[in-house]
Length: 401
Image: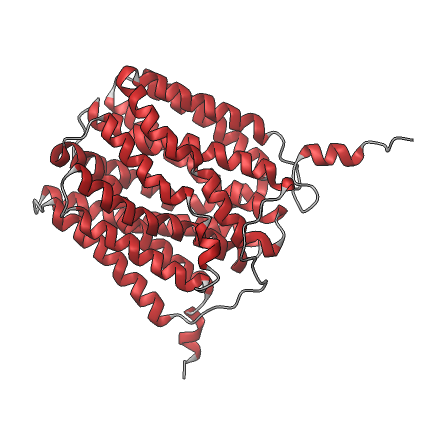
């Protein structure tokens, strides 16, 4: 029998934080090492990097498949399985220092990462009360960032002091994620869902603004994930240790500010939070196109990462407008929508990069501007029936005689 002390920490929010910590241990290591590993060990150019990133996003595009897997596997168990795949894919990466090998291990890692991210969003929005959602989501980001700090610190020490090979770096990171996932599976019970979720795809017209913002978020984020880091290595010659320290700084800011950002979103509302984010990103992407000093580029990279923490507002906006039974299905569908552009942009923009890296970043600024315009349609108090300001306007129009 469990003691009261044991029961006190066996809660859904503790499980979410534990799993949130497991993800960046693998993914942050994979991401921090990727550009150097790909260039040094597999002779990647912008073209191969673009193809790899497009392949990485295919599982995200197919995230709606989570809905059908829920017919056979509980959502919580599927989250554990996804974490195991993330750890396995990362652990194997260093053993295959070739173009094809890196493509294959990336797909395995990506299936675990994207399916888990879909499930985490769904479980968090189901388990967390609306009044606490923004702050709790900020706490999850901070928890993941703290784990990332430890990971980046380990990479920096292992590379600079111990001179460990890529094989060991990837193996250690992936193994830690596998260990955390297995522990969570064994220790935590299955927590009940308050509302039975749909086990089929749900596309509702009234969610169109959320879908549009999600699509633009996926397109815009690829510029940061794929090409901002590549800029640091190719143009400014950043080493593995330099990239690890840069990621370490990003994670430190998240630990310090993510929970505060969550509170800010709850206080100023989703529309104002997103307007602030998109205005900042327009300036940051334009800065990438013009920057010539490595220190300024690093500052833009950190600022870019911090702005993306404001994306909490998009999740809480959906929680407020969604029917409770739609959350799991829509989380999968929206994740696929988020990755439609993500499948196309890395490869196509990889070719654009060869002609003009500046145009890649100006395109990112244009995407942020479109998102800015869309966010103006979010109402002051989003809810079911008032999903966007056009709905409010139409409901207030007098009926025709």
